[in-house]
Image (cartoon, rainbow, N blue to C red):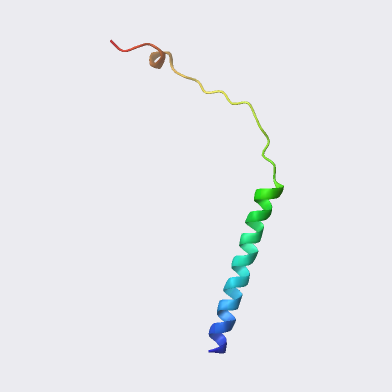
Length: 49
């Protein structure tokens, strides 16, 4: 039984580290806005008959 408790404790600690890292990235990293351009073929701009 102690090995199961130790295993679950390690899994919970690893999950906590991953979750806290994810939260840190979500709150501390600001995305940098950039311009975006998409080329549309002329055939898509003409109405179909």
